[in-house]
Length: 129
Image (cartoon, rainbow, N blue to C red; front, side, top):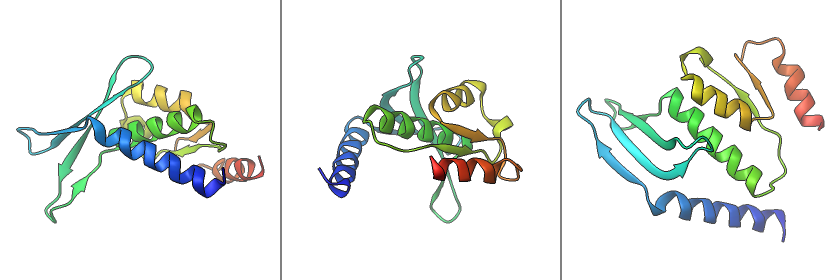
């Protein structure tokens, strides 16, 4: 199977899985709760919150971004897709410890900040691996 065909198959399977049992529920605070059929290995369900923007769009909070990154990394690993993950946090301390722990377990490398002096060394290392 060519790489393009493999990517298309992964995309199709991921989209089919993501859309199968997703529900969107309005909350009293104006946010939307998005529930998915996914669970982390520790048993916690994967859900996310979306905040409405004045423009009509939605903001995805850092916690949701961390959870989505974890799910995508774990999915690609399970599919034996050859890649090297590098997570760069914008505000690591604002995330719940459980979300940081999950992402730490899934990612190959991570940096607490984009301003980290180690960033370019890790990027170069990942690219040469």
